[in-house]
Length: 243
Image 1 (cartoon, one colour):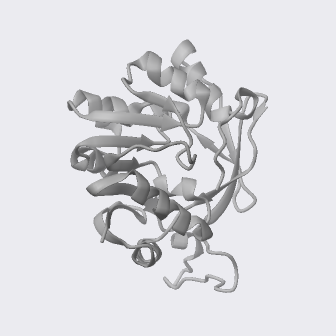
Image 2: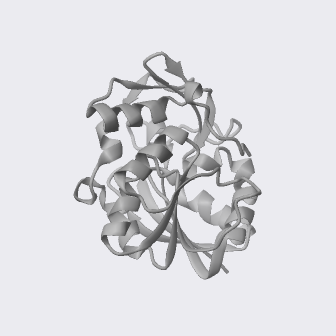
């Protein structure tokens, strides 16, 4: 697993977040992948208030209790929403630019930390992994390392609230059947690269995982997965607890 932080010259999303915060506008945050056509992330969506968040995210924020860790916190929209609810939250990100913006926006505890850094040791009652939070795991082969880290960070009786999507809809035929090559890599393992203005980040792995596969890996690693809510487009919110 990668345990590094981002350098400013390799941090397109952080640069976009900083521009939007400082200038109240941002240019295109472009997304490339070897598996898909070029796409774009609307930067203003990274600053959305709780009223504009999808139901899965609002549900997760309501369920989060105790001492909360917001992983990959970005501009801090979830952390700020939790603070408004009077909850205690630690927001972490690997982007120095994003962490600086979070601090300026009023996130009380924003840290420049990689989740998988061995030096990051703390305990939390709820670990939030939202906006396709399973993505930072990267590949299925990293699941045991991920769950090992979760056991280190979770307080007794604590939980992970994670949302993800089942990408099988991309392989759906007209008759409703699915054409997935079982001999190939898992269909939810995607490579991405981002660019903002002239700033181009390194390519990185991102994991979308269907709930059944998540449940199997969770069980193998001593966790129980519970399906909390399903979205409208193959997305879902899961709760993971140590068995």
